[in-house]
Amino acid sequence: MKTSRPIRARIRPAAILANYRSAKACAPDAWAWAVVKADAYGHGQLRAVEALRHEADGFALLECENAVLLREHGVRQPILLLEGIFGEADARRVVDYGLHSAVHCREQIEMLAAHARADRPLSLYLKINSGMNRLGFDAATLPQAWESLKKIPALNLTLMTHFAEADGARGVLWQLERFKALAGDWHGPVSLGNSAAILRHPLAHGDWVRPGIMLYGASPFADQSAAEFGLQPAMSLESRIIGVQSIAAGERVGYGGTFTAEQPMRIGIVACGYADGYPRSAPSGTPIAVAGKLTRTVGRVSMDMLACDLTDIPDAGIDSPVTLWGPGEAGHVPADAVAAAAGTISYELFCAVAPRVPVTVDGQ
Ligand SMILES: *Cc1c(COP(=O)(O)O)cnc(C)c1O
Image (cartoon, rainbow, N blue to C red; front, side, top):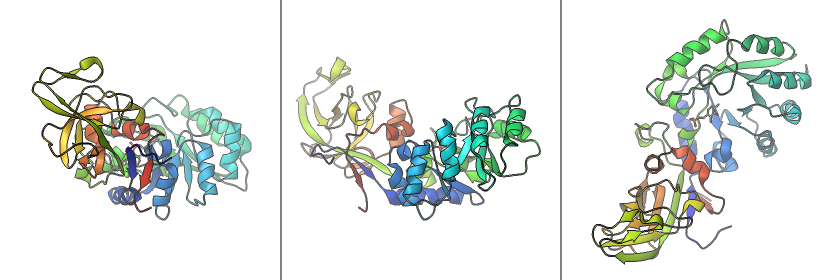
């Protein structure tokens, strides 16, 4: 519903396409699954798929229902279920709709084997636990997996693993070594890199990379910005000033009075709160742009509002544009900067944008 309350999420499909091309340029010898799980990291699954329709090598997501929805929407590319199947019904749909499925435990392989048909090759991604210790087979369970896979009459197999610290100091080589040891004499295709590995570890791409966050124009790194990689922000969160207070030194702002004015201040009240998806954990000082100038939030984020410092923006008042994150009418605030201030990552900000926030799509 397009409400008159001024908050908006703005999505740029052209940025998603440009970022996918950047991922392909970073991994020129690999195919790339466009990861559109979690409603394309809050950007809208169909919007992202539409943006990449003519270029993506494949789409990766979680729910079988969403994969089927894409098929019914006319998507012809491979679709990969990143967590594999959750039951018998999914196993049937993987076969019927020709979906690619990760298999991370023996139960999944057994279920798929029971539905497999000789006339329909099954495309499976055997997930190897190389140190993330979340999903996948290790040295103890891998032999059983190979045994179970023999029951599938027609099989296209890819080996995959997921990096835990591709964005950090420990990197990926330790996991690559474990992966190679577990893969043994496997010479078939492998799928390795997430965004961090695509951008920073050229030896850890594999035949299929799996870019997620970089498609949406944010950085997987705490120490390197999206702009440094030429990534384009695909989402902006924008609103307007709906109230102004002039306060004396010593006055506090907001719930709990966590911010105290040290001198007289002009405070702007923005129509955006944690019920819109803005993080309540964002402290005073989180960057925000108003009417073309960068400023800071003050006090605690409320459910429907937050406060910011307008002292040095005398022209700003009721109805002035505000950019919470992304490039907007009021200026550009990197989502990564807001996330860092709030002690989280842009992934979480994007995924948390609330259903009550109306979405506008550039070019539509
Ligand atoms: C989410 C996910 C990705 C994408 O990770 P980014 O850090 O967003 O690039 C890749 N592979 C798997 C298995 C995932 O679950």
